[in-house]
Length: 502
Image (cartoon, rainbow, N blue to C red; front, side, top):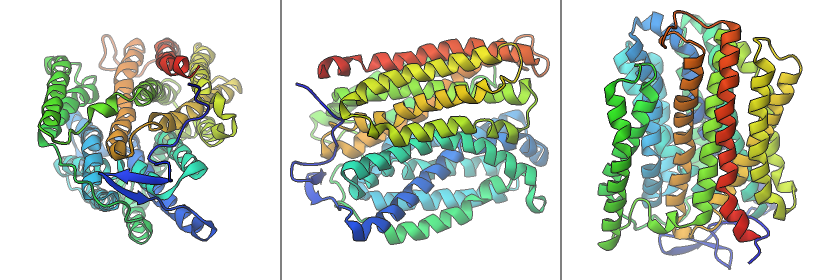
């Protein structure tokens, strides 16, 4: 059977949606309601931008934090990574909580928690309080972000829904770049002598404004689902994610001690335990945290796999490239962040224009875009391999990289949810929200470790100081090779869908 376009998810033939066994009609945006829907989109995208920004903005502030708080390197790691760990571990659970208690309710709870925790971070008197507040921040983000897909499903339909998902994909990619620039600007400004604290405190007025708008604008949506929380699945899944994320986040800085190896070795057995637990829940008539029928969707599995490879390469190369600019070439954090403007432009352009291509081209376009991004990685590595600044060719190659990412991420989000039963939409959204976060953690750990080792970085074998420009450049070029290969695996992950639709 020929499939000409990426179909919309979450709709019945009558244009209605089903959640938890209850059918309700999705609100359509007539002319009189477009401004309201625009406001809803600004609220939810503003919230997810703020959450993703906080995953990177702190990196630039760590030197100032170390001096001001007189903290250890291990505590500094937990300040940076405590947010990522709690955020990534809670995403699938957050999606189930949204389905059970209402997407709007859980979104507001997450946004309020995130805002309050940001205030606590900004006023933290010491490293211990700051670490605890960062973990709570991650919990707030883990509750808030998984509701985005469902709120988009509730509010938009047809081309408007596809545009909203495209904007969401652009926000995911651009927020990481903007975080580096914003962190550098805020720390450098040293507002009222507060040093690093505005990095967190800026979230407070923004969060309060978003809360006020969200209370007024967000739709009440579907009645809460009758699905249970699945505590056995929650415990085993959280343990599995922590066994994966914690060693990947902390391993390199601690020189990969034995506990990191043991944790990573336990991931596969714990995954098997989780699958068995979920099957048991299903046999008893319960509601598994990740229903088996969700993972039997070929579109979801292939789309999520391609998304994983794409986001892992993006995060890993962005980390390595940023390190090269700042330590290899001696650029300031602010200038290094601004250097990624062509990348952000390419991502935004690709995310917002892919729908203009003929529908029958969408799936081959994603595969071709993976190759485009791979060419961007290799080109940047080649242009900088001698230790120079790359000249005018560097912005062009970054634009190429960004276009490849933009024409991949946004349509993959649409593709992965295209054939999910509406009753499973929130669970599928939780899986799909978790995949990019795990991909970024894995990408930075894997590709970033390759770069740091080859650059002879401090803390690696033989590293005694910042690498030379040439050593750093050659390490970046060597890192570009596995990044490009991994990105091409994303294209290969789509082959089953290409064959089926042919």
